Amino acid sequence: MSNEFVDVLVIGAGPSGCVSSSYLKKNNINVKVVEKTKFPRLVVGESLIPRVMDHFDEAGLLPALHTVGFEKKLGARFLRGNEVCIFDFSDKFGEGWDWTWQVPRSDFDHALAQEVINKGVDLEFETEVIDIKFDGTNSITTVKSKDGEAKEIHAKFVIDSSGYGRVLPRLLDLEKPSKLSPHSAIFSHVKDRNREEGTEGTLISFDIIETEVWLWVIPFSNGNTSLGIVGPTEYIDKLLENKNTAHALKKAISLSDYYIKRFGNVEFLFEPKHLKDYSCSVKSLFGEGFALTGNASEFLDPVFSSGMAFATESGMLAAKLTLRQLNREKIDWQKEYADYILYGVDVFTTYIKEWYTGNLQELFFHQPANEDIKRKICAVLAGYVWNKDNPFVRKHDTVIKNLANLIKLEKQ
Image (cartoon, rainbow, N blue to C red):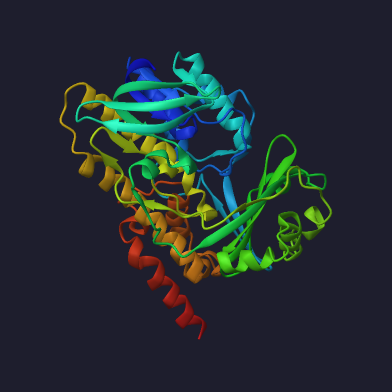
């Protein structure tokens, strides 16, 4: 079996792995990336939020992404029957990017990976991690190529950005159940033939069918649109009674008065995918010689598109701490990494839970809208969930519930 020696091994070439490896390469670290699949490949998570732009910028990946011409996302729209709530990222509390993109992830991830390769990172596709051992100072990772050949990669540190593959959580028994109640989704892409001209046609929307059930609509610049239904697993299972995902998604679209005209008769570009009980968690975000980033650690829920933000936030932070550790600094991974990342996870978890209780929806659709409250919530939706100057971050565990109760009392 052949051996390879690197400073850092990154598992997975999605956005988290690309941000980590690009940052490390920029800082003259010998980094290698192994990716199980061949790109381009289909993956969910097509709606970004502004916080990710900070990380792509810092990793030196923004210029390459700009050239592709992805659809700009300036905010988000929430629909409930005849009620409409629009958040504009340029009108939010605090500093931060006021736009981002909505992207077909196969194209987006492919562009990222190619740019990482252009920067000189050794990125190996169709290479699967089958085993890993840590000896206190180094790791030995056994990988298998598509032609079945195995080799050992020796690294001083491993960053697991394997996403839904969750390589180290599986190999090291780090899995644990999510705190969120089980939800599932069905999604596909369509050729958006009936798309309206102008902003209306390109706006990302969340159409609330019932308090816990919603439809996503994410238009892309290539003329296609991503459509998905999200709901409690029990609800999605009922939609799938005849095991036909296309029939289930068509039925879901027919529940939306707003979108039935636009999407009622369109063909799916691929057999709709069923993502069952997607939320997941881990016992620890790090260990001796490794850190977990993105969906390899925590995945919450697609409702506020937080997945990519955690992927790039954790990918960038893990890379920075790894660099310092390689430079002989003593790193407190619990305090500087886990506690920091999990604070943001807690904030978004609160917002997701309060979305599904209906409390957050009360705030979104309350009229007349309180513009100050809206700006503070908008900053959270933009991914700035570590800015404790924002009371909707700092007091996340009480503020939504309390305001929703006030609105309910007012109505009575």
